[in-house]
Amino acid sequence: MRRICYNNGVVAYAFENFASLPLQAHVSARHGGVSPKPWHSLNFGHSRGDARERVLENFARFCAAVGRDPSKPVRTHQVHSTEVGEVGWEDAGTRRQRCDALITKAVDLPLFLVFADCVPLVIYDAAHHALGACHAGWRGTVDGMASSTLRAMKAAFGTDAAKVHVGIGPSIGPESYEVGEEVIERAVSSLTGGEKYFCRRNGDQENPCFDLWQANIDQLTAAGVPEGQIELSGIDTARRTAEFFSHRTEKGRCGLFGLLTWLEPREKGNRLQVKI
Image 1 (cartoon, rainbow, N blue to C red):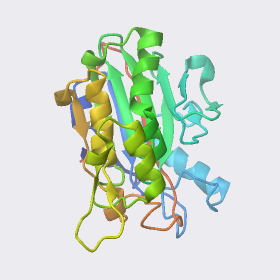
Image 2: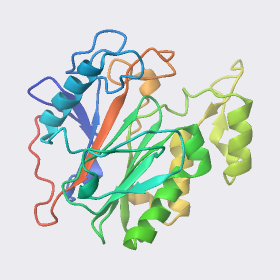
Image 3: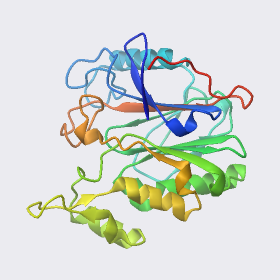
């Protein structure tokens, strides 16, 4: 991913494999906002103790940096489900309840989700000019969030998985995400070859680590997405807390970073000017 610094102090990351495609997808870092510690500084979650007015100001700054009207994005009430909501311009500025993915064909309609270790996924259907954005924590990954989103896009738009491009954003990495028996049992029983997603960093480690990245890649490729059309950021939020919020590392005393993505007109392409 490319790190982008904007004039107002906001920092975001953009996927390399989307650079020549008619969409935008920006993952915020934690810089350029107004929130104090422990949410410093560009926090998008007011349910964790931060003041609502600061969160709104942070969102306005992020939207200004990437050239979006903060009143337009469609949001979700994320509950670690595999529910997918199809949205259009009639949904601008609303929040979908109990939903962890959004899909659309509406050009210029921004989709917005929040994270603090869970996996951000952006799915672009080049053939039908359609977009999906989803949030996959361990439950979403084990229950098939990525494949559920692809199925929803196929049903709504005729999406062929072989023709999509995917970005997997910053999230907790395979050497940082120690998990207990509940996660292991669910993953082993639900994922094909589930045992392979667990390993220990060293012989003294009590609990194994769960590789959310590979589990999502394997779901995508099993659904028909060519591996060469998947970009993995490889950024481990648990080890990059100067840049991203991490629920695990910061023991829940942190904010939420965001993914803001939208379709551009096909003829326009990806022309957002950025300062690297």
